[in-house]
Every structure is written in C-alpha cells, then in structure tokens.
Length: 406
Image 1 (cartoon, rainbow, N blue to C red):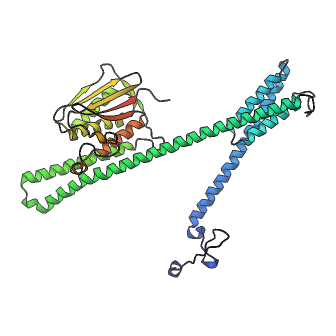
Image 2 (image 1 turned 90 degrees about the horizontal axis):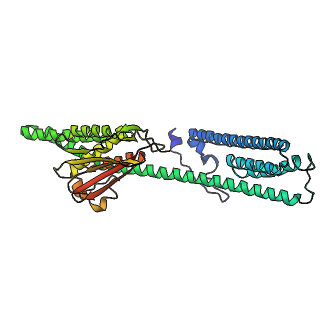
Image 3 (image 1 turned 60 degrees about the horizontal axis):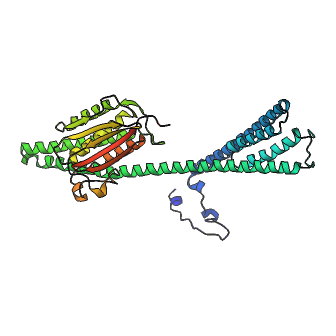
C-alpha cells in the first residue's frame, strides 16, 4: 500500500488530444475516485432519461393537438356552409398550442407542414387526395405554410425569451442571497469577536487577580461578563430568526397581524433588557392589520430600538410611531442623539459600523449584524427599509405591504 501511495506518475502529453500519461502509469478519474465515476454515470443516465421523457411528451402533445384540430375541423365542415376560414383558424390555434408547450422549433414547424397537408387532403376539393396542381392552390398553401412557420418561430422565440428572463431573475435572486450571506458573515465576524474578547479578558482578570480585587471591582467585572453574554444571546436570536426565511425564495410565511399588538410586544421585550429606557409609542386609533411574520417584525423593531439606545448617546426618550396608507404600514423609530455619518447612510444595513470611526467602533459592540438582519427580514416581507438623519438625531423607518402579494 505504501509503495502504491508513493508511486510517482509520469505525465506525457500527446499531440493528438488531451490524453495524460501512458501505459501502466496513466490514471483515470474512476481509479482515483470510483464513487465519483459511479455518480457521474448515474447523472448521465438521468440526463438521458429526462431527454427521452421530454421527447415523448413533445410527441404526445403534437399528436394530441393535430388529432383534436382535425376532429374539430370535420365538425365545422359538417355544420358550416363555408368552413375554410374556421378550419384555417383551428389549425393556427393548434400551432400556437404546439409551439407553446413543446421544446424547440421542430414540432412547431412539423405541425405547420402537417396542417397544410391535412387541409389539402381532408378539406380541399378533391377530398381524400393530395392535389397542389389546381390554379391558385400553390400560392394559398405556400402562404398558409409561411404564416404557420412564422407563427411557430415567433411563439417559440417568445417562450425562449421568457425562459431567459426567468433564468436571469433566478440568477439575480441568487446574487442577492449571496450578498446577504456575505454581509451577515462580515457583521458576525465583528459582533462575535468584540464581546468574546471582553468576556475572556474579564474572566481572566477574575481568575488571576481575584484575591487582589475589591468586591466592587469583582462585581463590575461580573456585570460586564453578564452584559456581553446577553449581547451574544441577542445575536444568536437574530441569527436564528434568519432561519425562518425560506432559503429558496427568500420569503417568509406571513399572516394578518394587528400592528399595535406587535409593537406592544416588541417594546415589552426591549424593556426587559433596557428597563431604564423610555419609549414613546404612537399608533393609529383604529386597528391596523398587515401581512407579516410577527416574530420577525418584532425582532426588527427590537434591533432598531437597541441600536438607538446604545449608540444615540442621548437620555431623551426614543420614539416609535406607526402610520399607514392605502398600500402599506410604515414604522418610524427616532432617536435624539448624535445622528449617523452621512457617508455611511447608504451602507448602514450592510453590516458595517455607522456612527463612529473604525477605531472607536472596535471599542464597543456594534449593531452591524442586527441592522443587516433587519434589512434581510424586511426585504423578505416585500417591504423597504431606510435610515435618515433629522435635525435632532437619526430615524429608521421601514414599510410592510398590507395585502398578500400576488
């Protein structure tokens, strides 16, 4: 076994192709990875099976439509005095159906040829006989064939364009999801490092210098550890909330919820951590209903309230206001503090710090991940979220559609 493992393979290139190695020294993918070769063989077999199934489906659609069109034409021939126009329209309709529900151009063009033959054989004098020699027939049938072919080509082209647009939208969604993942990872890298570093430092001080510290100093270090641990718990809750978003569609399961109840629950959860904070709440007097995942929207409100409480550097009350219009419900959360750096307003939800310089932001726990998750949640609801400055601080607002999107 060791001899085989240490064997050196000589690589030679031939001028006739991409062959690598020769004789007993050449190795193949199947030798290196038999399971990989078996998997590739199964995938190849699956592709051939799928192609065969598609071909059968296309043939079945083609035969079904041509038979139905011919049958309907016989009916019109019996009940109409001049069925020529009706018969032609039936086959044109059948052509649209074949071009729409089969793959490629082949079956649409084949249907165009067959429709001309059927009209000539079954519905044109002399009946039950192919005859293109009568005066005017050549032009008529050539025109019908050209129209049918053009119709088939246009329908197939439109279908291909629709498929291309769908693929482009899928790629765009994938790019958006990748950007969200990157933003979350960037935010996590900072928001985990800072409290963990603090916990390690404070716990080390307690263990190594416990006998030399006063009770007040021990209490302060323990309180710092508890605060950092609560911060990590809050961050884990944020990360878990993202798992409620469908990974394929980037959407959430929504139901009608009373906005005032969601706001009340959010403020109550916020006060559990910041009992000294004051929040002025203003909601419409009438009950406002909106489509949402209530747990996720509560997380958004809590994140923004915590963000304002920690970074506004103000003792003035926070303001939480809700308003509505015909299409959406808008949440406003306003503080009266330092405001947001203007150059960071556009990237505030991308997991970056926003009020202080990079040196200062490393000295305390940021809310990068919280704001990034806020954006992810709101976008998954089909809403919008923004941050702006006002004359006395900063304001975050986000909107949610009232109705279920079609």
